[in-house]
Length: 145
Image 1 (cartoon, rainbow, N blue to C red):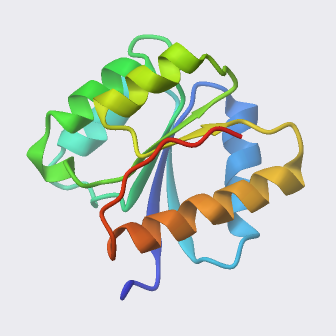
Image 2: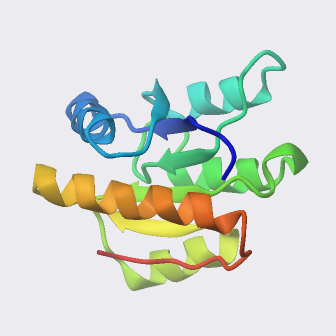
């Protein structure tokens, strides 16, 4: 990847989870810029804004008020501008039927929220390596941890 800085969007209604995520992201050896949203409505407003910087990857919580992760994913995939933007589902839940549905809807990866900070750093690093590699090969897959 030619970019030096990955533009990461995170939509999660839990402020502690957003802090945990942002702190872990800063500690991995990939330079990132993070934009945080506490609900899907604000995320979509930013994506639809002509002034917003395009994200390189979107991390999306499933269980959010106003607009959940399923609705956001469907709306993101309906926007041609974001057709190829990796969307990684980031959720505490793990339901195989939901994961299959998310894969069919166009999610790039499924990341179950880990309980340990070090696990989160490792998993975020793997996810961002996937984002970098996805520009070289177009394979899409769902992974649960």
